[in-house]
Length: 132
Image (tube, rainbow, N blue to C red; front, side):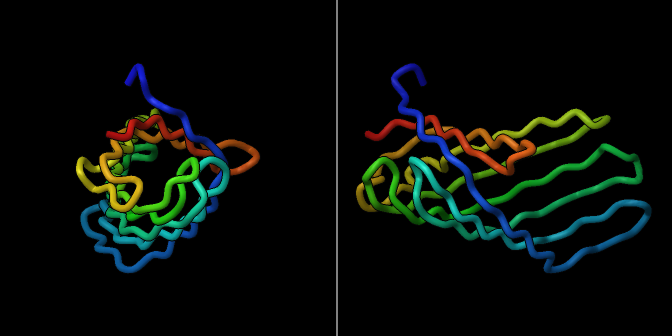
């Protein structure tokens, strides 16, 4: 995405467990997500996350879909984000992509990838995107 714009800022996230299935040292869980974005993206999202943990400390996985509703650099609309994350031996890998053709309103045609940064000062996002 060499011609991509960069949007960034902080966000708050609320994760609420909905159900979990535990057996044989593994757990599969479902959670609801609520996020509030600030900065270049002003808005909120709701989503669902599925998690999997194993009996080995530092090994897990998750997938999630969330609908973002807000204003991105002055353009209003919605779009979907798809998360895919895995942790092995404590090493994390995470990909968060804008679902193709999910943009509405002034965000129709959006494509991109979001990086989530977790630090001492909380959660931050960096969204590299293009608009058709």
